[in-house]
Image (cartoon, rainbow, N blue to C red; front, side, top):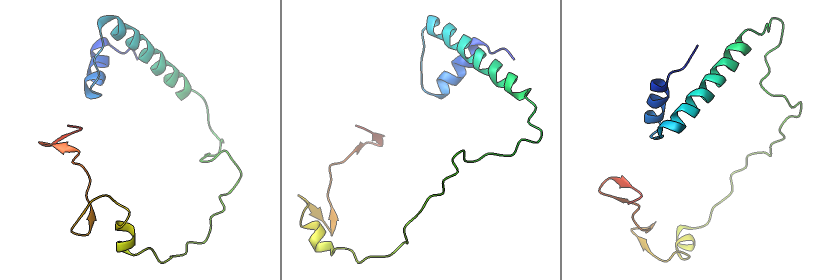
Length: 101
C-alpha cells in the first residue's frame, strides 16, 4: 500500500505539525517504508505461537496496601506561601481559556 503526500499532510495537520516540501517528501518515503514493513509482518505465519503479554518471567511483588493517617490540613498549609479558603493558592496558568498564557 503506497502512501501519498496528501495523506502525510493530513496526518501532520491532525498532529498540529507543518513540514516544508523537502521534509514532506522524506516523511512520505519513511511512512511508506514503515507501512511496507507492517504488511510484510502480516504475512508471517503465527499459527501455534502463544500470545505473549509479558516477556519477563518475573512477577511483581507488591506490598500490602495499608491506609495511614495523614497530616492535618493546618500542618500541611503552614508550609505554603499563600492559602485561600483552606486551599493552596497558586498563580493562574490559564488566561482567557488558553493554556500556557
